[in-house]
Image (cartoon, rainbow, N blue to C red; front, side, top):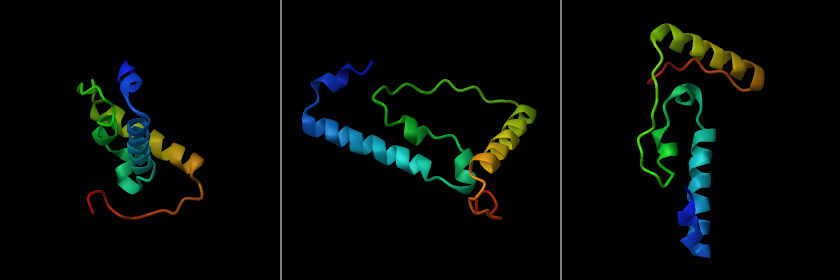
Length: 89
């Protein structure tokens, strides 16, 4: 799957690592409602350009997942500042 890396020069490999690191940092530094969104920009950093095969949960399952995700943030980022900003603001 990653055979393309075998043909890249050292400079090209360094450029690829920098591009990937930047994408991971953008994702890592997402905050507020941006944490919840679908991230095709991150996936687009991969060389294969296949559309991701996602399954969209129904609303009840989706909302339970949102609550579970927010609870995990409470546990894993208990000291993070809170915001009252609405989605889309």
